[in-house]
Image 1 (tube, rainbow, N blue to C red):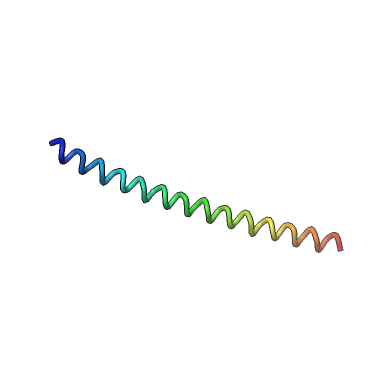
Image 2 (image 1 turned 90 degrees about the horizontal axis):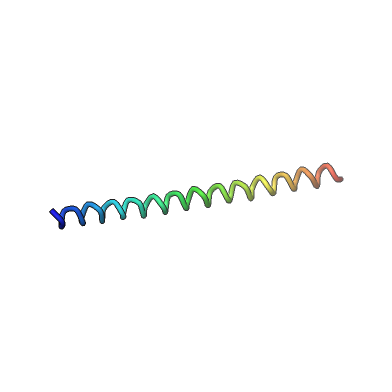
Length: 50
């Protein structure tokens, strides 16, 4: 029983680890998106200033 339970908890921790990786990639993508939108807004500001 205990061995099976530890194996299940190990799988669960592995899944949560993958989930952390996925959420990390998602946050990285959102960071790139904010950087792109920042460049876009800077481009519009330069255009309007000229």
